[in-house]
Length: 346
Ligand SMILES: [Mn+2]
Image (cartoon, rainbow, N blue to C red; front, side, top):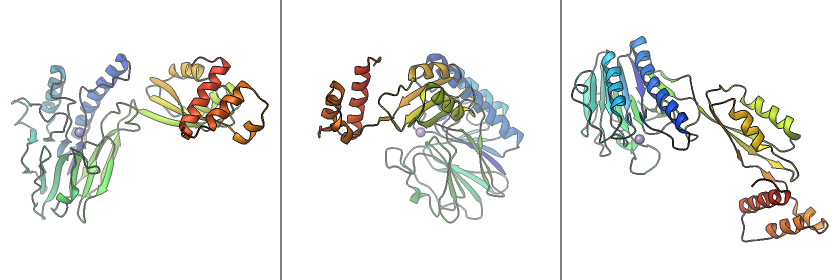
């Protein structure tokens, strides 16, 4: 039996750092991706869809999103299993949705048997009571939380070990992860469906799990994604050179993508980095483009001491010999100071 596993859809979420039109297009794309996954599950004749929490971004999603989800579920003949996440634990699903092919695991651990000896279990909330499962069955367990860090949402994996779990279907962490649970089972985070910021970079999608072969397959969904690329600008030779380097670096990305370019490396103090002109050019080629300048000015304290007296050399010496500043602070002050002396826009 094939199982389609998603989590952290966060329907209705928006990223306030983006313009309202970009926020809106990401929200709509996210809803369409959810529909795509359900159609995909139908197409491959999956035996179940499991959603490991944070389907909605809040307990008060819009009526449109609630209806939209209801229609997607009703149109699909496959049973859909759900545990709530920390974002939607207080959301109440309507009676008509609950009870048909939509099954919610509430705050008590419970199980349901499907065909092919497959048993799906789950529990919402953080007070985990994982029962010992029948070792002759194929056991899938749904939980929502973080297996890596001990915060409010911590899941202690030792509570799940040696309970005959074959596939621990997790949600909460927004990127794909497939790890070893114990001798028998794996734990899997499918990640979110749509990246919603530069902290959610790269391909996003869902997992298809085959209970017969135990194969775990991450499937990326085509469309908008967030990307961070680094460009070392040491020794670059003027505008045309850096422009060409950026074009090369970004040539495989689509016009729909959200791109952050980080300048790194060391540059000569007289070099201009053309950040304004470049940002304007590439903003027209992608959904979103920004440059974050993390490059450092190339300074040789030895050389500075030998330099003839000038306002600039005195300023740089002052900064570099100030023991109360760390390297990062020195670099920032030097960058700003040199730009100011040059008369740049700050
Ligand atoms: Mn969560």
